[in-house]
Length: 145
Image 1: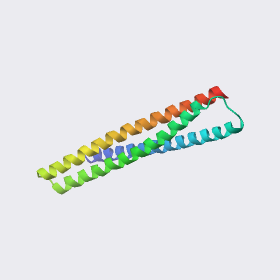
Image 2: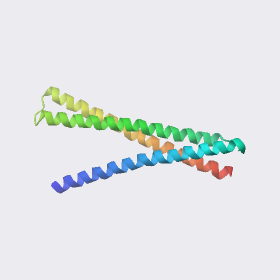
Image 3: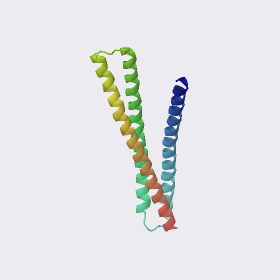
Image 4: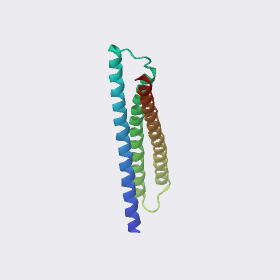
């Protein structure tokens, strides 16, 4: 039983590490994409380029991806906060919680689930938005130069 608990703890730590890395990758890739776009727009002032619509759209998507990622950080923090409150309420209640304690435990658990669902959805949106922006940027350079 102890080895199962250890394995669960190690799985959770691995999962948490992977989530952190994905967030860092999204922010890094979007930041690099924004830099490339700004440099291209600066270049276009002295060397007129055909259509800048695609590259401007990609820039907007990179920025949107970063904003959505920041919002997901907030919802993730809130999910963890509610989970901690739920655990503390369970600890305070002991083996047999009264109605008030059970209601508090359920409320915190439900809020943690809601925030977790929002966090997962926002992370997915952030990843998809970043990928669409990256593909748009690549297509722009493939067909413009």
